[in-house]
Image (tube, rainbow, N blue to C red):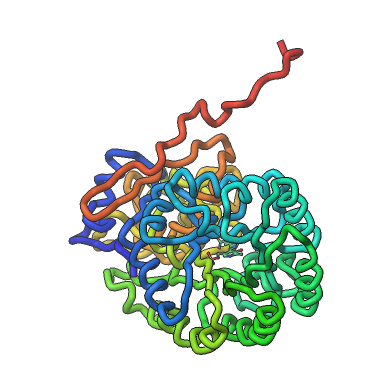
Length: 432
Ligand code: LLP
C-alpha cells in the first residue's frame, strides 16, 4: 500500500497536495512518502518476526540521505555495494555494523574502508576477492567477517537484465563449488566465515522461485554451518511490487486491482519461507530494495508540448530517460496519472522526454487521458531505481527530491545547479 491518492481531483502525497510541491520546487521532481517507506519496512520486519532476522535495505534502489535516515531510525541495516554507499550510510546516521557489503568488484581501498568501519559482513563473489579481503585484513591486523554469495542456478522468472541467480549471470559462485571454497577460505587466517548469502533476482512477484532457491540451499547451509559455525543466512532481496495499479482508471483504491490482489505480500513470502528457515537456527538477513522504496516515490513532470505526427500522439514532458531510465532500459511499466483529474476522453499516447534518443520514452501507445500542454503528470512507483540511476546525459541537471511526512515536506536534495554539471571539467592548458 502507498500514500499517493486523490483527494477530490488532486493527487496528494500523504497530507500534501503534489501540485503545491510543484509550485514551490518546479519539475522534474521526485516526491517520496516517508510513511510509505516506514510502512513497508515495518510490514516486512513484522512478517519475519518468527526468526531472528535483520532487514538490510538495498540502498542501491534509493540512497537519498533522508530515505536512509527514515530506515536507520527504524533499525534497518543496509545492503551496500560501494564505499560511496557506506559513506552515505554514515552521513545519514546509519550503523555500519549493520551493513553487508555486496558486489563483484570490491577494490582494495573499498575493502579497507569497510573494515575500518566494522561492517557486519563482506558478501564475497569470488575466490580472488576472498584472498584480497584476507590480505587487506592482515595488513590492518583485523579479522574480516565474510560470507560467500552462492549462485543457486534457479530461474527467477523476471526480466533478463535483473535475473542474477543462474549460471548465465556473473554473480556469486556456483552452488557445486561452494563447499570447496569455504574449506579453502577457512584456512585464510584473517577471515571469519560468518554466513552464507544468495540473491536470485529482482521484481519477483511469486514465491516459487524464492522457495525453490531456499530449498536447494538448505542442505548446503546446514553442512556449512556444521563445519564453520556460521551466524547467518542471507536470502537476498527481490520481492516485487505492483507497477500496474488502478489509479489511472479513477479508483483511488489501487490495492483492489487484480494485480495488487495477486502480489506477493510479505505475509505470503514469510508464510512460505519461515517454515523452511526456522529449523536452521541461524539469523536470517534480507536485502529488500524495491519492496521498501518502489511505491514510496513518484516522479512529477510538466507537459511541454502535445504533438500529433502520422498516427501518433506524443506527449512531450520535461522529465526524460536521464531522470528515470527504467522504461528505456527494461521496457518497464510506470503508471502515468495527471496531478489534476477531470473527465476527458482517452487517447492512445506516447509520453516521451526531450532527450535525443528514440529510446527516451515513458510509455508507448498507451490509452491515457487526453493530456494537455501545461499540466503536470506523475510517473508512479518511481521510488526504486529512479533517481539513483539518473545521469546528466544531454547536460540535463539532476532533479530535486522532496520528502513528505504527513502535512510536512522538506527538500531531500536541491535541484542541481547548472554549473555543477561541468564542475571539475577543464580545458587543457594548451587549448587557448
Ligand atoms: N541484493 C542484491 C545482491 C542485489 O543485487 C539486489 C539488486 C538487491 C539485493 C535488491 O533487489 P530488490 O529487492 O530491489 O529487487 N535497476 C533494476 C534493478 C536492479 C537490481 C539489482 N540488484 C530495476 O530498475 O529494475
